[in-house]
Image 1 (cartoon, helix red, strand yellow):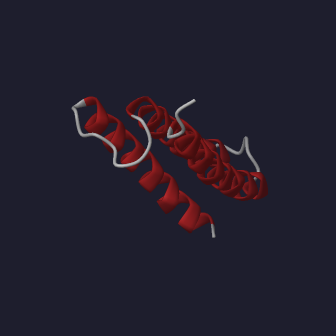
Image 2 (cartoon, rainbow, N blue to C red):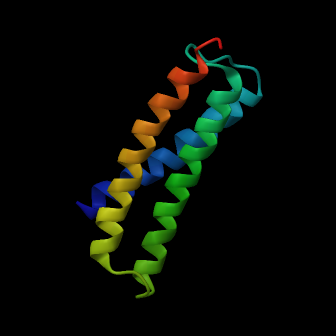
Amino acid sequence: MLNYLKIFSWLLLTFGVVGFLAIVLGFAPEIGSRPAALGLMGVQAAVGALILYGFKLNRLGKLDRKYLLYGGWALIVLLVILGQVWVNISDINL
């Protein structure tokens, strides 16, 4: 399960950075507003980087494997839920 977390973290980081750069270069998102999409891509890249940093701490013996596994997946679930809320709320014209 830890291998899947590492692969998924690399995908989060890569797509977060590429998505952020694409939006900055002018590609408009299909849903939500541009600032919301920029923020979400930034948070996605940060979550991916944070989990990968957790792998480094695990390798150095400063973070238990169990905490990395459960904490990493919890961060991803939280990112997905908050990301959906963020994009949907940004679409509402108040």
